[in-house]
Length: 73
Image (cartoon, rainbow, N blue to C red; front, side, top):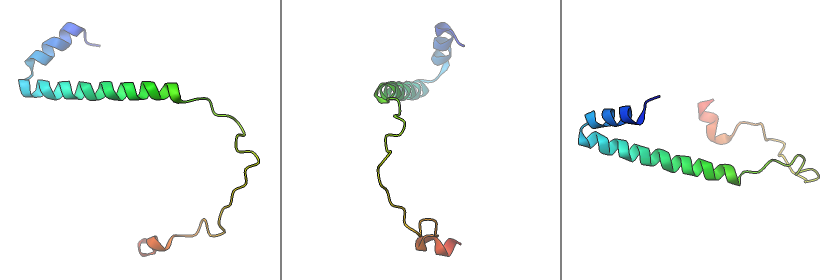
């Protein structure tokens, strides 16, 4: 892992245009990290059997090929 000083020295070697690209990329990574950190807080443990007793229907032709894809088969 790079130290902060090593990272800064590498960044200084980049032309200003690429430094801006790097800043944009870091901003993107930080937003993504914040999104996933917040998402972890929202997720809760699954409740086993929470759909028990709920009626559902599956059509008899559920596994049949769709007409839209016949030309590809």
